[in-house]
View (cartoon, helix red, strand yellow):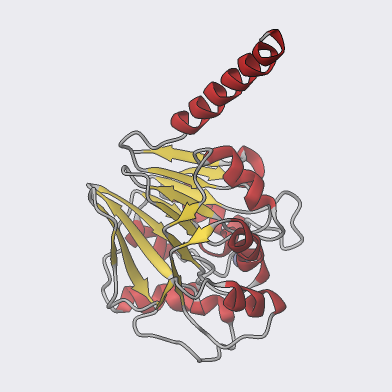
Length: 273
Ligand SMILES: [Zn+2]
């Protein structure tokens, strides 16, 4: 009996601890957006008020797994929607690792033609039973609780197409929750920004995830003014060889008076709505 008690007490304590960790990481009726700290790349985790999980890009390497371990409820192994904005390795590599550890119910991709071993592995590892959607502005996603993923770009499906500049195949999403809007632009550059502006797409958003890691090839003055964000988040790695974020983009964010958060300086950026 004594022997049994020796095991039971730690076991009960461990179960209580794990349950507490699990419960403490539920969204508790809020929308939680985490700009994960994955170094020089993008990865954004969205938890809806009813704990649906959306993962947009996975960054380079496998640091996304550590980030997900830190923020997701302990027992959460399901991803309701995985979004691959475009198949450059600083967006896709971590998703390949996530596919091996988590159940993915649905994926939103462009299906562009591009040669990259991670892309091949990603497409091969997508579960057969997962719903796969090819991005188009015609198809938006309603997650309930007032959470919408409004796909702004590409305007039409681009599956099978080749791009001279793959960044400009990036899926651009406006996440809407009640009165709040968050614009997530992948690595879309000024050419895409100009297309969105000339099409008169509603861009106005409270928060902007700076395009292409704060590069000068994105975040034109006209675009940033149309978005008019109060907060800009830049996902980039410290001492990255590209020099991101570039001074030109930082000046534009400063001029419109936005607060800027950077994963290289601030680590993971978490917002609760
Ligand atoms: Zn990138």
